[in-house]
Length: 247
Image 1 (cartoon, rainbow, N blue to C red):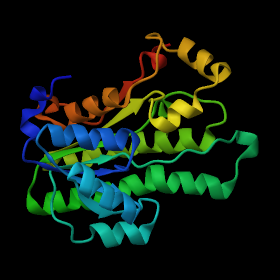
Image 2 (image 1 turned 60 degrees about the vertical axis):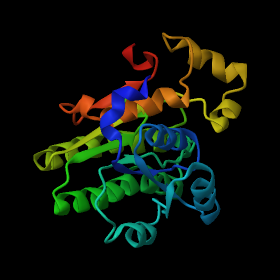
Image 3 (image 1 turned 120 degrees about the vertical axis):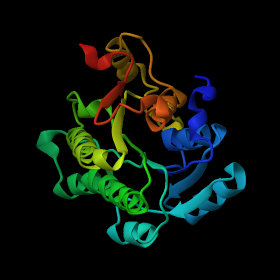
Image 4 (image 1 turned 135 degrees about the vertical axis):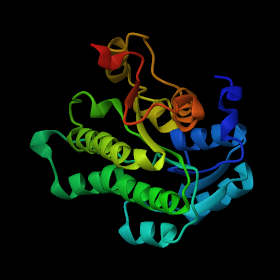
């Protein structure tokens, strides 16, 4: 997708959580290529230094699963033009094997952490009178059931609900809130995880387009939702899934 479609993002500042790798990194790179200033939220000092050095991003140490880290990083943080909540974790367990501590860990990052980061960012925007947009990176797992993904499905469904509530409440302040819901996306970790044909082939067969997503194919819809091209879109959960959820 041509970045000329996102000219209005130039000069604006966005926080991207989970920016060290995968969809978060590619989204941050695409934002920077569109002329935006990127604040890269990462958990480790090594990643923060690498992104400053190699990508030219402003870095922010931020563990979205930790309440103290969120408060330390974002209390009194300056008003931004928007946020991409991309930090997330997964846990594989069936309903019969559910571990309460693991459930809480996944929910703390994927749902609670995203909501609290958005709370801080949106609060600063409202206080400064700034309009803007928030995009939460959810999953097709919010829209359909996946075997052995109870915690993950629950957390991403919660994230979509958070998106709708925030869209309702922040709309009067000129802040739009949307989700993107990608299918399996071929980050380096996913390439390894889905290399076994016995696992990969049935999943591909369920996708009408017949392939998994590339990270840039998720990042560009995020940029669209941040941009003025989506000025009348808020509260949606946008599948980026090759048609998986249309069945």
